[in-house]
Length: 356
Image (tube, rainbow, N blue to C red; front, side, top):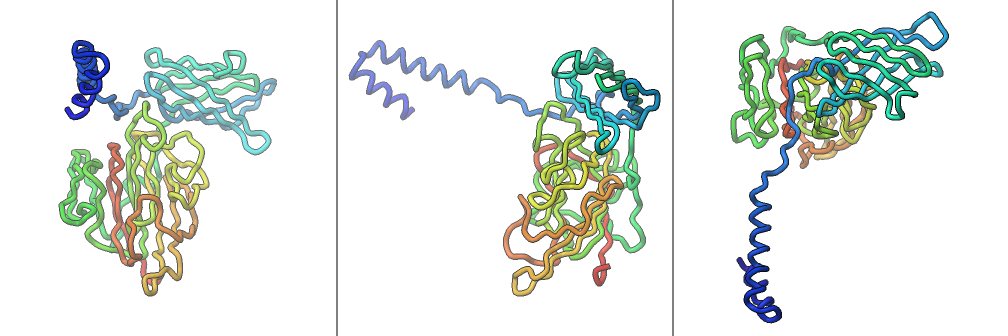
């Protein structure tokens, strides 16, 4: 109202009452129209389309009869669009072809961005991918790969933080809100997992050196990009993050899945496609602290879906979005709510004694 009154006073001095009332009405109408428009919806989770995922088979170079092992990662990009990254060979014999296409039912005709002259192919969703480029031909079948550590049972003496039983919602007794003043707000699911919702959570118990097992599932969010695509994080001692993100088919970075945020890039991206259960097996040695100062930095080894992506990496500072303040040890484990419907299950750890 204050702004409208000011506009009216200025108009009266220059244009007269009639013109001013029309101007104020136009301003008010524009404001009302803007308020009436709903905010653009954020990209959300979608059901698995049966097209995105991994395809494995052979690549036969042009003019040759013998093939070599090849793989393709098909990435959903929203609106029925897909990007297929096909690779084969290593070193100076490595081949990489990138094709794009839009679904027609369960079939996706593929072509390179440069046109059919560079490469073309077809995805039969959930069945096969064939493609041909100047360099040779790919022939691959759809494959559903699982982590070898999926559903690994906690050993004797382990501390179970999130128990898993198929078909039974898990208990959250080991967890509280980040401030510690409320029960865990995350939502137990009938499939035995825990849905991220309502803010970061931490364990009631504090830990020092641990061997940690975590299982997580990134949602399928094909229209989302970057840090908005299945984001969460596992924070050792609430300070040191191992990134959780849908990084399937992407290049390694410290802020992609498996990255030690702002510290270390994973050796490879070991991510499975979204909507698949994945595993972290983490060996963490806490920093040695004297008089509130770190005298020996923390170290971490991470195995992602059975592949070692970090080994004895030193962490000498709190990573992005970690809990700041005085360095204390022991400290709780924290899991992050980044606004995406990530799920966790089967979380447990073994406390390491004397560094072993």
